[in-house]
Image 1 (cartoon, rainbow, N blue to C red):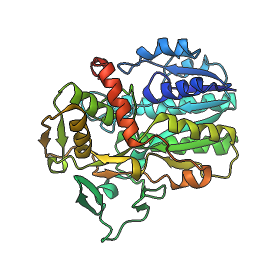
Image 2 (tube, rainbow, N blue to C red; image 1 turned 120 degrees about the horizontal axis):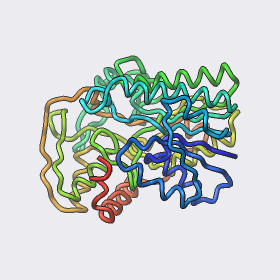
Image 3 (tube, rainbow, N blue to C red; image 1 turned 30 degrees about the horizontal axis):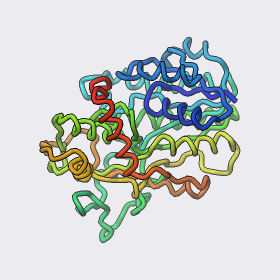
Image 4 (cartoon, rainbow, N blue to C red; image 1 turned 180 degrees about the vertical axis):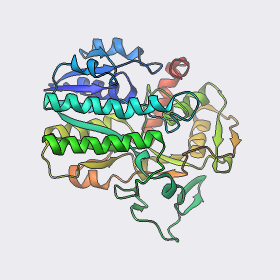
Length: 354
């Protein structure tokens, strides 16, 4: 079996390839990446050493995809993943749409031509900003938690946000392009009889991630703390109580294997895949962890709200557990320690990747 991974030099794509190679999986892995992310170039040599072929190409260019060898499965791990992409003054709105939607449409044509299966890695940010921002919350242990004494909207529980939660706009350009990509992927699957799975992933985290304040927040925070770089709690009164969950790519890999092995499995085509409530923490709690590991440091506060930020976003992966018997095995503590160990061994990494 040949697997094509898009964005293979990014954090998720690279770790999926490495996971399968280290496990000795009997598959051929080919990847495509345009190397536009700082730090992605560093993975090319490692991929070659692992026997993984990297093709320098851009999903926005249909001609680059036409030159790819046929694959049995495609793992789409390529995207501009920042929720502020297109509005942060560092990237253009058209670029976001071209990367995250036009690229997907070109990839779907490749999938159709190759008669391949597709696994689209989507995001928690396809869920509506306004309903997320209006969730009833209270503060416990320096973190926002759901206030169970008040009515909760449909699609949310103590376990997190499930697949029925509202996806109505606004979502951000990033969220909207990923939601549109989901719809088109499912339509191609139905129209052309192709197996398609859509996995809405929470925050991916682990050693070697390209830490950035808008994504890769766990790696960015830990690496910045180690190097004593300035950090700020942004919005929500500047207390750092906003909460996210974390998922390691190797836990994602186990689910992808099952989805590729059982393309006709009677399971929802769209599911949440995340660390969940047991693998979640606030920035203030992350600071507490960093303080214990690296020593004290002051974190500045910027109470002014930022566009598209939400105070609490944990995904409920009950459907993945029910239909695939899948749950994350890498604890949040293990993820944090892995990131910290890597940061100490590679103190230059943050400068390479931001």
